[in-house]
Length: 299
Length: 269
Ligand SMILES: Nc1ncnc2c1ncn2[C@@H]1O[C@H](COP(=O)(O)OP(=O)(O)OP(=O)(O)O)[C@@H](O)[C@H]1O
Ligand SMILES: [Mg+2]
Image (cartoon, rainbow over all chains, first blue to last red):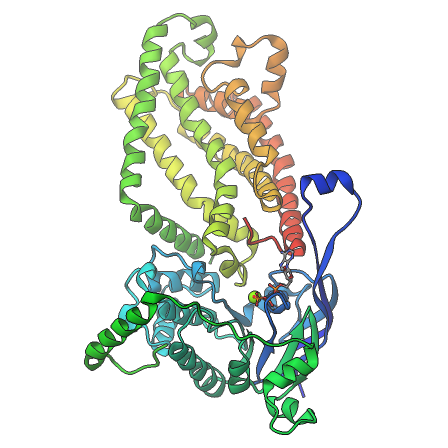
């Protein structure tokens, strides 16, 4: 079987920046932090692979290594058969990267202008770019709002734009770093369905995503790798992982505790007195507008 | 296809610049003020420094107009590249650009194109106001020679700007190249007064700065219409600087990107 992502002992150590006094006291001491340690994974075509771990586990670092944004300290990796260090241009040509960072767009340009600009960085120009951008706006259901400024979009729409951008070059492999971060539960659910149905099943892409939601990983992923303190503790399908425990009716929670020795705390959204009211108002507005809206996935 | 890519960067920056409409017009408006200041300074000086100004036609206002106009390119180059990196780092858009197949040096170069276009526009406005409103005489100008000097100037200054940007990439702030050139160029480069005014030992400093040759060449070409042949000393000096600075800039930049990718600091600010 041919693999789309392969890593061999992929390791990333960061040298910590020293403060001035530290530097004077121990000028030759090197403080290192190992963000990713000896990671070995193989991911095949059309697979939806999830990397699950708590904050600081090394998920983002691993994704950035594979996207060629940072260089490994040791080990190698191949994406689409290209070495990430030696052939990074080729890797970038055939991959897409989707962050949850909404600042990664030009807020004063419209959604369409943003996409067209990034299309030109992928070497799509004028007519080709136009066509590609229209296609993607359709796919993510943002055609109607494409000519509004990016700053006027909701978090969910911004995230849809990020997805459209990540698909501009029709990549074989799509990396997603916490794609549902900052979305309300309903929107997150819609996005998960979108990833599974349209990106993986319909378009046949290989998806590598990171998450710290157990439920998300379980619902979405064909296989999960649990990462903690930079090391992969275990890899397998959610069912495999659960059945391997000697415990009846075990949950992914149990799996996580078993392999990391840690309790997994799902992030709880901070309670805000107005947030519930705002949500209701939004719902109300949506309700009113429902009639005029064309179909498409909303998240 | 590089020109199409360039066009899309310019379009992006034009939309961004004009989206801050007030600032855009304010900048245009205040350009007139600095010119007028020097116009009156020149009036005050009258024929005072004429023995120093003789090699440039003798008129202080014409002299200083070209000085402030074209030194703008140095400022733009020094700030343009590093500011475009820092700006994208701050906005958070740098990472999104770096995951595309377009390589980093192309991204940085094209990102600063807009500042060069804006600077060129400003230079043009300065010169037009000077010639048509304030009596600067450029009837003999050798435009072709001026163009040659301009291109060499931009190449030299850009290389310095790229070296400065490489420092920014690693140090984030306080890069020495920028400070060095910013602080020395006005004093030693002959922007406001001919370097002949300086004591001999200070003039040595002037001779190691590209801006000195660029301004001297530009003045001779625009005010006195020197031929390419007569401009050879300045042109050769600028060419030598280019030959040294261009590879140095590319090397520094390559090293900067690599270091930032190892440290994982490419997108921090
Ligand atoms: N540029 C850097 N310099 C130094 N240390 C870094 C750098 N980037 C990440 N780290 C460290 O590497 C470790 C892994 O970080 P990473 O961002 O990959 O975690 P993560 O799993 O994505 O966490 P989160 O869920 O919070 O996003 C952390 O301890 C972090 O402090
Ligand atoms: Mg992360």
